[in-house]
Amino acid sequence: MTAPDVAERLRAALRSHPGRTAAVVGAETLTHAELDTAGGALAARLRALGVRPGQTVLLHLRQSVHTLTGMIAALRAGAAWCVTEPGHPAERLAALPRDLECG
Image 1 (cartoon, rainbow, N blue to C red):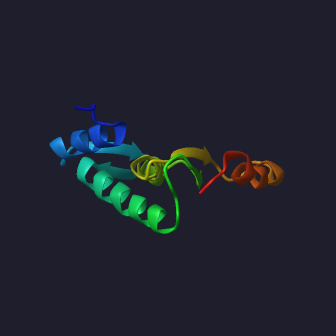
Image 2 (cartoon, rainbow, N blue to C red):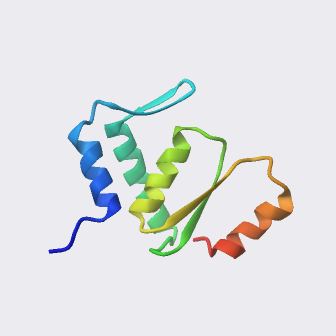
């Protein structure tokens, strides 16, 4: 018997207390259930777009609950993630997809 992976353990934790607050960023709040649902939907979309295990998903957005959702979605798709915020130099942002082998 193999141990559950991180994504499975996270899903189990989120589902065990669906009404609890999972994240608060400024005025934005997500419950465990909302985070599980949003992460699953985005993971399915990432897979449909061709993201495969071992790739890196580049999240380019300001810090928000969406950042956490994107990280969880990448994890559930078997991918890694890299978060960048708007405002970084354009040449650095342009190099990331190539350097990280993004999906």
